[in-house]
Image (cartoon, rainbow, N blue to C red):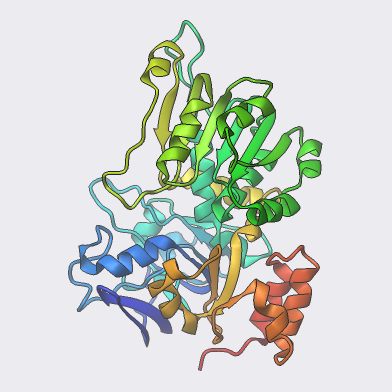
Length: 420
């Protein structure tokens, strides 16, 4: 079967090419990719090329396909996997395969599987490690966002607390407790709030901070305090660009500290702010991924010793976390659409990946069988003045609080220009 895919040949050397996939065989699976969400990790892989730990040294002669946040439907199943999968199944993917001593991952390391492609051959090793996951939801884009959502779910699962007089670690956020999400009005922060409010283990109080009123206002319009209250959570938004943000945060919680604190920006003052508001046995999760290998911040070790405060860092989610994300999306409990700010066709994937840090906004979603430029949802109405498809997309998103949605996805899949 012929595919068109974005392949990496070296540092900042990405090429959109068509080529033949190997046949399915007894141990493979052939699948059609529908959408891929472009991750900053793909930009980092592109920048590092063969020096990236997941990109093969011989990528110049055996280029892998980029993209690891993808979904689609299965077309053909080899004999070895016919008891688990069938043609027509929709799927999500766990790219971080649990292989000891190996960094190999779909979307970085393999020549026949990656998200920025029309069709893929999924090698047996992916199924052998339980990393091809069934998805039963209606919207493909949801499953494309299961990997970033799994990172947030994993962060919540990694929180731990130690009952007094024991050495037992109770895992997860404190149910009914106080939780602060710092620098969390961006795309990943919205996903975190969504999970804390609509997931299976809820704090009683969630305070979301940022220093930009427009971001806070958008977050508040999407994840409303009224809806949170219906789910048993008091949700408060706070601009910490004030004289004493630590005191302001404590005042919201009746002068007390917080059981769980998430830090979503690699900024030393934000980390220190999070440390300063921890309650006894409070857990600070440093979720943000710094690029500075020497990044550090002050931490109150008096409180570590006498109040039992502690810190945890998470990067990525487990297969179980992705399964949970897919399940909650399929049930309509999580809506990661709030992360998406731009849509494009496969022909936009190369430039989007290479220039991702320069493109403001949240997630950039690629529909792999389509040919149209990367476009911000906020620009749909303007483009719709001359393009009737964008006019339809603008209307569909306007009816969904400005968010990407199933109706809009169907419009793209049915009416956007297809790859030649």
